[in-house]
Image (cartoon, rainbow, N blue to C red):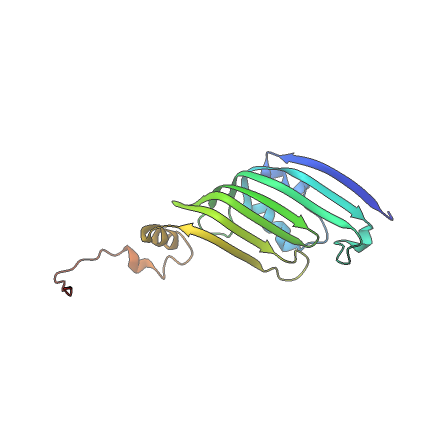
Length: 174
């Protein structure tokens, strides 16, 4: 095939079938496996465009276009084994060429509300991907402790489970 000119839309309500929609080549196979296992539940809908010669993909020289724009609703994301799952995410995803951008409008991590989260992976191709995350998390100390105790770091922070008692407390006066 010399040239492709393809556009369409999609609606995926069963994320168990996401592997049928992921590219077979062009992105890191480890990233594909991560996407298959991390996307646990929710809905994805959006549109895509693929224009240009397949040999030029992902069109770094602006000699074609590859774009996927999607909305995620009520997405559950198991982002890393043994860490608490991010739940009920509503987000916008955009894949342009070799990069992925995700804007999370709302979601939950244990009892902590997630808002204004921005995720970027600059290069989805082979090699080691670097994920950049910027977010506003509003939580109290007990939620942070709970997060740590439900993570692979739980042994390092097990002292946080111990009761604290004071038999003598001296406070300075103003």
